[in-house]
Length: 501
Ligand code: BES
Ligand code: MN
Ligand code: ZN
Image 1 (cartoon, helix red, strand yellow):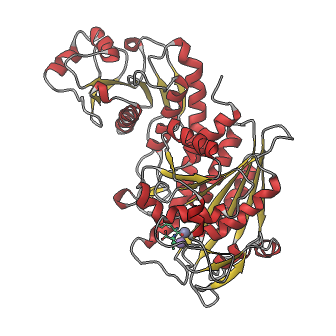
Image 2 (tube, rainbow, N blue to C red; image 1 turned 90 degrees about the vertical axis):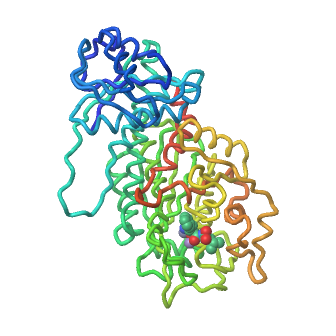
Image 3 (cartoon, rainbow, N blue to C red; image 1 turned 90 degrees about the horizontal axis):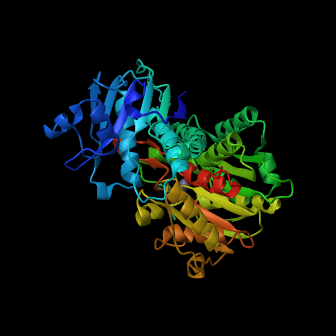
């Protein structure tokens, strides 16, 4: 555990294991480095003139036992060109500083890296980002390697240094909230990184139950297969049919607001492994379909963040947890099933299973007469084609809600982009034999999936986040990202007014 605080101490007098300052790619020192250079009798400007100090983003240089200042180590971090120094560059510089500090045995890091000018980021967001980035730097995946584990990092305390007295309370509030968001992200990453043979529907349910034990404000209810059958969730059960793992429906309720206040409902896709079913997927990268429960994981994680921060609002989390497998009992292309709402669905492709479990979960949301419903799902490969890995796809039936989510993503550096969801797309879901088909062809695949959900959310204020491109990264750094927990947390924090002092 790392503690966070702020310091208004003059930088040269700051007693710390490691002081981090930034250096722009320009001829002269400025800001914190200039102030320190005076106390250091020009040592920094000499190194700079010799070209020995880093100025480019991602670069850093550790100076041991610097003379003239109280810090034991001085970490100089490149900031790049001043005109390109915005939120993203600041985050990169701060991450670079954290990573470099973690390679030392410093227990206390003081961050005095310049903030972007004329940026909306205030002290509160600075605090949040520092805690958030620290959490990311410290995160270690829950791997199953049997060799010796690397030593525990020495870092115990991170301070934001060089802060003006006026920014102090905002920064502290931001640090506290950022810490909770980082914990939520770590939980989501852990759940996502677990293999499908560990993280099953029953495992997700037990994790939800554990959260209910840890946070007394979270009420958790788990529905098993017979109870799901009684709710007539025919679409959810159609997906689960081929699997030996029984499905679970998870209900989490958090009450932090007035009794009469309508709750927000979060709904998550919890396909703990997606083989595609009878419409079997290609083998390439199929292992990554263990991440197909990241919508569910983000519901659990965001509920935890709300409980930790004691947000003053009412919140419900719903998770449909299933495994999508082929098998002799599995649903076949062309099978027709009846959703909880009563609509019949022709399942033309068993790999379009996310929308099937979500439509029944969205129906369950109605009983809360919610202020808004937001679902999260690794729903379509088409969303990855449309937006790549940078933006979450946002759709829905309420532009104000979609815009609110986009703003939250912007503020939290976890961005989403709205895709159009007009009736033309729903027309692609026509079926000859049932009320609708579960696929709408290749074209506009992310949106026709959204349109399918839209057929079940009439009368609700609803938004859908397609996180297929953002929930995890592939390749050598394969792993969960913890997205969209920052976006959702920011959204809730703003709804609850907790960003203000
Ligand atoms: N879980 C997948 C979506 C997915 C695929 C996410 C690859 C991330 C990477 C989803 O269940 C799925 O299989 N969707 C199909 C829908 C199609 C059959 C209409 C897809 O995207 O190919
Ligand atoms: Mn699928
Ligand atoms: Zn899926």
